Length: 136
Image 1 (spheres, rainbow, N blue to C red):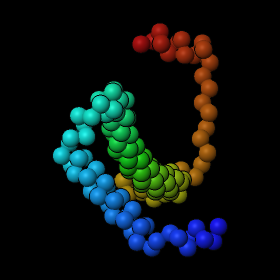
Image 2: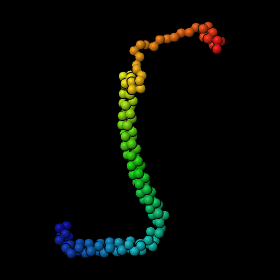
Image 3: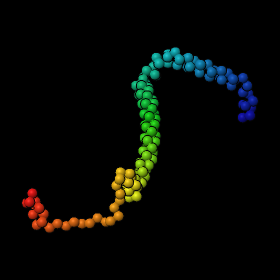
Image 4: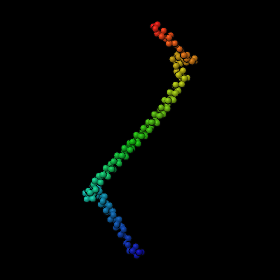
């Protein structure tokens, strides 16, 4: 076994690399020229290749759609946060303005004052009410 390893000459692996480079460069030139499309194997698999190309286009479009949707979600989320903070601010102003002391201060500028006596209930009999209506 060791004799075989010794018999392998050194420059031979380099020749393989040069051959690989030539085939790679030829393949690259064929792809760039478009001549590989005329080969029989490629023509036989053309429906599959078109299907794969369609899938790639669909995948790219789906990526754009997803990105747009994520941007819209972020925008909606930020709008929701702004509206919530505005709601809290307006609610606190409303609660402050509805206080009895605040209402009393506000109507004081119009010349009205808060009554310190509780309201009285007035009761009228039905007979008296009918009598008042018939007098008119």
